[in-house]
Image 1: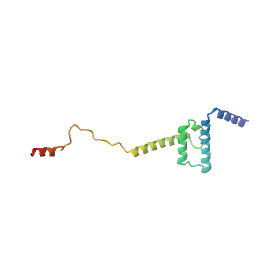
Image 2: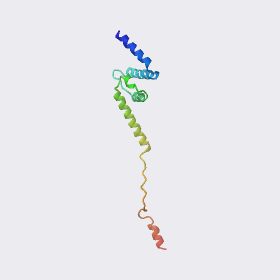
Image 3: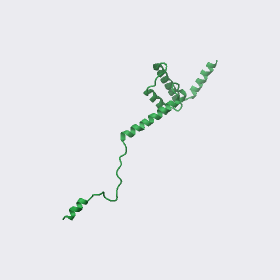
Image 4: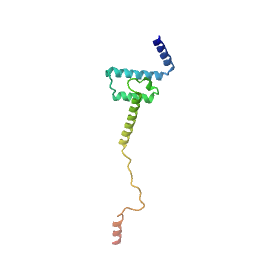
Length: 122
């Protein structure tokens, strides 16, 4: 009886949610099943799996509810690490900004001295 009530409540909730939320929920659950199926007793998450959860987190607000194989805080940490790595890579590609010397109001030492001697020798 309790199982029937749970299934009925799940069906009502599924009807109330949007189609996009249902598709993302199914995608998340299928991904977790595939990870467990190829991973054995304690599945190892590959970088592709981590990237999947980071991408899903950015698209779907209710992602943490369907997460079973890792903690939601772990996914947030992956997202932060990926964000830092992204900006580190971007900044390395461009390099540090090139600085110009500050403009001076007077010419540097020795400027025009040879010209002055040449002018005085005439």
